[in-house]
Amino acid sequence: MLKENFWKTLISIFFFTCGCLFVLNTYQELNDSSNLGSVNGLIDFAKKYSRHDFLQVLSSNIIVLIVILYAGFFTGGLMSALVLFWNGLIAMLVFVQFADMYAFDKLLYAFMLHGSIELPVFFIAANKSYRGLNFYLSMYREKLNLNLIPSPKEFAGLGAALVLAALVETNL
Image (cartoon, rainbow, N blue to C red; front, top):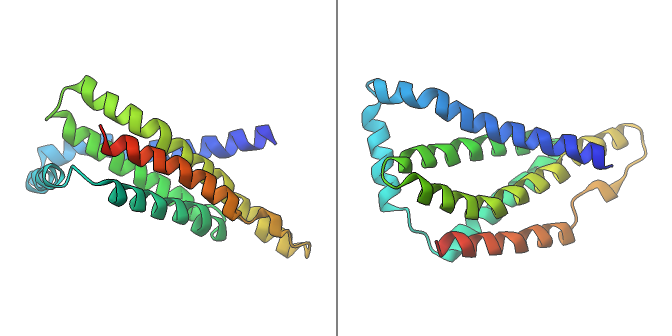
């Protein structure tokens, strides 16, 4: 069980990292090309909307959790992988954009505090959503196992951790 969870978590981290690397790979190209106006527009947008209140951050994180946990489960983990890739892409894009405006150590501190709670929650949710593939296999084998579906108790535990992540993020 531990070995299986390790590989599932590694897959989640892989997709998140791919999103981050995609931004790093294309960021220089964006800055060197005629798309610079769109990058500057994104910086202006980020400056204008960089402060969020607690409920905005929490509701956004809860929606991501629902998509990763339940939509991911019912797509056999595919949706979870896509959301993790997108989350990595957005996180790195924000990091790269703000790196020009703030000191690197302060930016890294903010990301570490915020990400050290939020990312493991999303990785755990993705890990649970990968059970969807086993669920469909159990249906195929005519031995339906409803215990594989993520329970409300699992959702509540992960949601409670996201409350803490939202508190940290809005008070940095």
